[in-house]
Length: 224
Image (cartoon, rainbow, N blue to C red):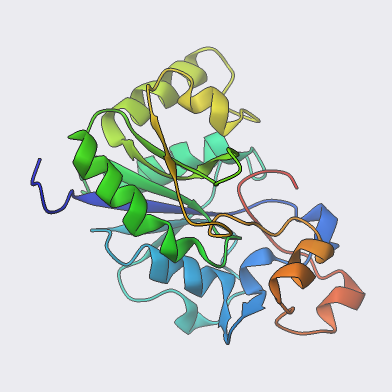
């Protein structure tokens, strides 16, 4: 591995029911003038190829930069493990073959500060199965990590063979990977599951009327 950088692709999870936000898509929420999806894409700007897994049909056409792929997990709302597997498949079909995969949920507005820390830790470790973000409080965040692409593919195939990929958790997907926990700056993996979370981070809905109508949409690759 190059001691200065490692090559990676990225999967951004943006599909789910967003039930605790009344169905308002997390990726459309605004933080400091940009949507959470735009901030996630910026955090993944070092990736060779990026795929957004989720419902992008309601997003403005300019939201996804040229070259960014989009797909859905099958079946829809099948959970984060299935979403990561779908992202891996989309990248494979596009010919992407970076040795590592950056996995990011789209609801962490400050995660761009965590990505370089993860990258540096992966370099320092000399590669391996990968690295996972961990807050100063010791809370691990598996949806912010750099993981071995090959080992993730193997893990996804194993879960699928056991009928456990659909509605499977990220922790189950990563169970066979000996990943290193990496402490990242406080708040960089804070996510938005509820309106209280959003308020604490200073996040607003893209359109305030959406919070009243409960507009349908997609969200982070879980069911929350």
